[in-house]
Image 1 (spheres, helix red, strand yellow):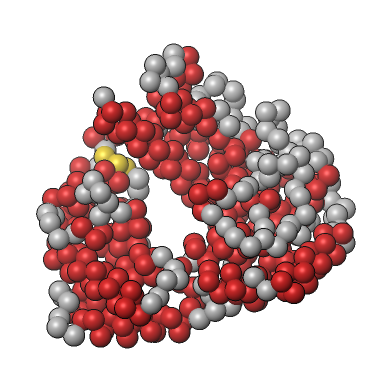
Image 2: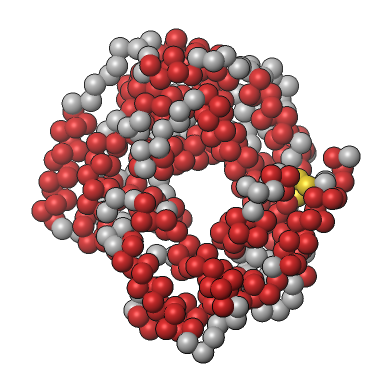
Length: 428
């Protein structure tokens, strides 16, 4: 029965703690595995859901849960060796004066590979680590945040890029496609119709994306959803600027970001596989054109997925207001979200506010406008694909992207609620 199913995240936490000491470099202050430990080591390298699809779900039945815990327990010696290797890598990194990149993103999986090959670090581990660090430095080359800072720190280059941005922004072309018809086609796709390729061929993504430039009152099907879907904090997207810095803690809405912020986010998100990216000058040059394109995206298929995502976001109803869901995709996503414990608590708070208030009240309020978190996260996914020239080729692939973002937003909200509850319990 579903009542006996357990969240995969909770199982990972339990199995990790049962491994005992020796994992501190891969753990948080409370002893749980770091988010990157789960994302970069436990899931892809220990659980390996690509080979064990039955363990890929967010909820696992008792048999699956037992297998999940067994795999982590079996990997215990290798995980402890991975933790030791990570300590060696951090020392070698400091000794070599390396400051670029997030060490967890860059080294976690390499440390696991070395643990598989050598076990605990041998006497010459420091030299092995330095050799790997030199290889990584060569592979990422001019694909670092520091390289971006230096490239955009040149005043002459800043002026040149700003002039190009102004020129491209002034020359934007609005496609002739009918916006209302494009959104109606999106609704059909969300309800199961095979009209995705028709949307791409008709440049529906370009038509809707460019309509945002003039605030065309897009008919998303929900009066509470703004035309820009939360992709900008302004009535219409502003002309992009060059910029000279970025902060992950205070990142603007996607269409309000500077060139620096747009490239910065991609370098941060791709730090474990930067060798796949062009070097910084080319990244910046491509971003100039992309930032002035409809939806801030170059690929037409990606713009179409953004339109589909807008249609889905407009009908998200995690609080179960009773409004009829317009398509099959809405019904599937809303059912999943409305069963979330965090959504159930938030729904109770809308009628009977929690006396503790504070962060829980803020999180409950977020579910009144779920479209903002959804469309922003979808845009980031699509932007990453755009940088790599990775189109969404068919309706099924588009559905996977849309569903993956929905799951990600739900899990993020769940984690925020749990964190707020832990904070309240700690302060009690």
